[in-house]
Length: 340
Image 1 (tube, rainbow, N blue to C red):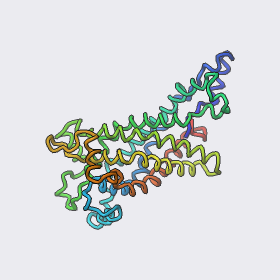
Image 2: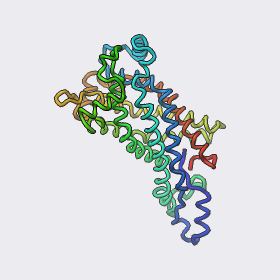
Image 3: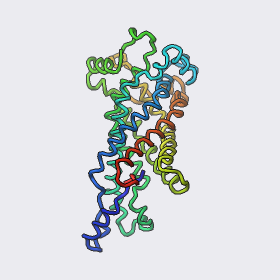
Image 4: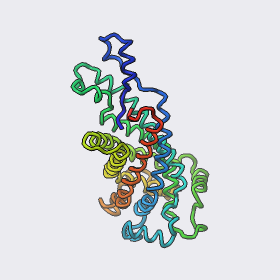
């Protein structure tokens, strides 16, 4: 999914600009297309939740449980199903159902926007310089956002969506670690009750507890979206796969690259988000306190606890989510090549 300046816009500039100033003018992509990424992101979020939430529940329980509570991901799954039924693996799904739709809308919409912004205002002006290495690229490649640009856009989109993701993931995490089979004994009856209690007892800072850890975690989006561009380019050049198939494979593989790099920071984030908020009971007032606690309790292995269900979830959930996103983008676009 490489951002690209439209041929029509470039031709329009060439007809109105003196030849000696061609390289100084950067053609802008159509502005009315910005909303499409936000709309398509909603479908991505719904798809991701449906496929991935059971894996996420097991991951969070392994990340936050005591060492002897579960023997591993399979034991955690079996215990959850035996004690709580199928509803147990979808526990806490309501906030991310709304949250993932909103988060993916913001993430993918802002990602689309940042790609255009970087391409038009950073990389195209750089490539317009006469001595820039891109002078050797063909015209089609010159118009595309380079992989480093996709990585940069990923970081910016990650930081942007963190302000939506932090409260949603905070509520979800607290609901997921309610192990009581009897609903009456649980601290929270559901996502609305959890949100109300957090706000009533701790205010806005309580709802946004873990925002700093969320920003750190989503900085690793550079690996996700940078590798997504690399995989997409590879499949387009070396295979005859259809566009949805390329989206599927590139989306699944790039998500696994992301989790391989970002997972330790997610473990730390979950520990912070499930930490008591009452003053005097907090174990991790700072990010480094949680990081040190994980190492102290379990060594380096502690940073990878729960990785197996997360890694298994990453491919199908994100592959299908990106198929949905790209498919909706193509449907809404007059041009079948939505990588504009």
